[in-house]
Image (tube, rainbow, N blue to C red):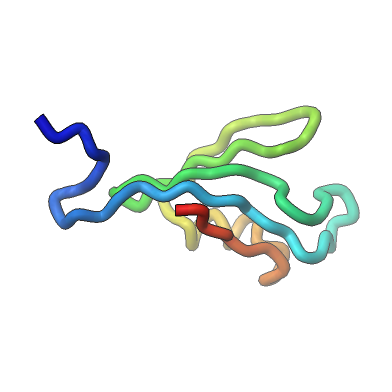
Length: 80
């Protein structure tokens, strides 16, 4: 049995950091602010690297960046 995580088209889930270059809010911080995973179906989950952390689910990376992109000052930095 193949236990590798992939969809029928061979896509693998991917880990990433949410990296912020500039904090326009003044409260979010800069650098690596969250860890995440993008699943083979496009859904994303992130957890914040802050003292008061939470976990959030998004339909896809585009939706995540619309909400947390800080006007293109935040990027997804893939590890895998």
